Image (cartoon, rainbow, N blue to C red; front, side):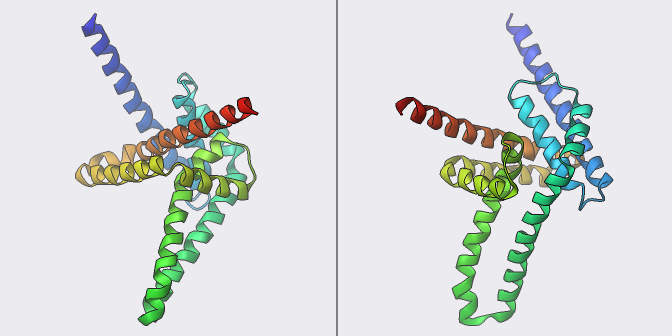
Length: 212
């Protein structure tokens, strides 16, 4: 009985590895299919949509068909959101570049608030696609909700950031796995953490509705 249990867990683990490698390759191909700058956002939406379904125990979905349908359905909307975030990121990047050239007191005075804003931007970016595939909102609401959820669940956010660093270290030590798990493993970690945050928020909302 114990042997069968071990074999079953090993099989499930191998199945997860194969699925993660498959969706990672799909993400790469569909990103390239959109010439990178038009493909990354809808490919990410498709990837996170599949990961969300898996985490909600919908494990028997047709992976390629689900990926393709989501990619096509979310192509315009996901690109709008992606480019909006890219513009904000570029603005922060050029601000840093400007501060480096200025130097002096102004650099020290403005660097701290800019660093804080950049950290908040990263937190928002971390939750963006999990929020995108979990809720039906406007573009601005996706950004606002990603920010709020990341802040009010800071302990989960910190764990997600720590896991991101660990995954980066893993890739540096085993670069051979990067083509197969570079995005999917990271995205699974993010979606898992975000789902915990969603569950906490939904539990609080239910508690408040019962009390009222």
